[in-house]
Picture 1 (cartoon, rainbow, N blue to C red):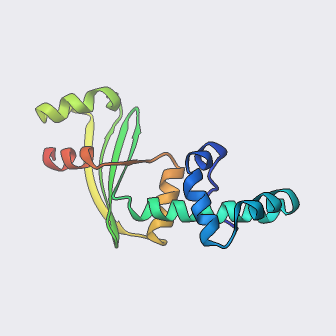
Picture 2: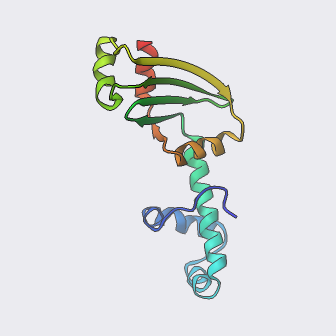
Picture 3: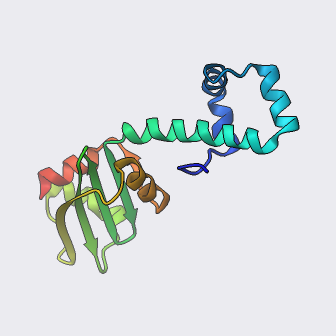
Length: 153
C-alpha cells in the first residue's frame, strides 16, 4: 500500500525520464515493464505507487514552507525538522485575498483581522504531516508571505 497518494497520469508523464531511471535502478528494463503492465497490472500499479512515494518523499523532505488561504484566513507555516511554526491572520469580515497585501505594505490591518502565531512538534512523521496538510488544501510556497508576516507582526 502506498504511503502517499499515487501520482496521476499527467504527473507520471511529466516525470517519465525519472520513472524510467527508477525502473532501471530497480532492475526493470523497458520490455520487462511492458510485460508487467500487460500480465501483472497489480504489480505494475504497486511499482507506480512505490515510485510515487519516492517522488513525494523527495518533495516533502525539501518543503520548508506551506500556505493555506481562504477568503477570511491566511495561515503560513514554516516546516522545520522538529516542529512547525504557524503565522496566521483570520477575519470575520475582511476579504483576506485582496486586502492582506495592501495591509502588509502599510502594516495597517483592518480592525477585524486577528493575527496569531504558534508552534508545535509534529504529531506524526514530518513528511506525512506535511502531506496531509497539502491534501487538506495547503500549498507549498517559497516562504515569502511567511517572512513578510513575520516582519509585519
